[in-house]
Length: 170
Image (cartoon, rainbow, N blue to C red; front, side):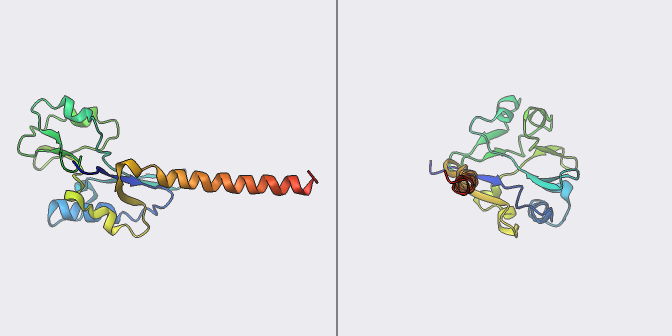
């Protein structure tokens, strides 16, 4: 197996345009643009003024797979993506209940559970996000952007502290 890739979301970059939901629903339904058909959800927190795209994290040891009574959920050997075999799914929703991230939804027309499948390795949500809020990165490197931002904040605080000390003649 090669490198695993995952979607990471930076809520600070999301402007709430919902293009990711639109392209996902169009790609997965074939002809409809509807947030209800998307496999990514943008949650809006009005009081905080933020929008957060919620996606499947494609867990290494997915609990959704473990609770599926018909073994319709598997981890792809090549990509590491957690996939639902829609032909095997009986729509019992046990995976929805078990997922700690709420990343699985129910398709009421087809009576099955659906979730992000990473578009076969080319996530449409990443390609359509104008602000770069959604990225598809190697799983082992997923934490680097946050580390970089933390380092920048630490550097700024250190510079500020040094200037404050210099001003005091220390």
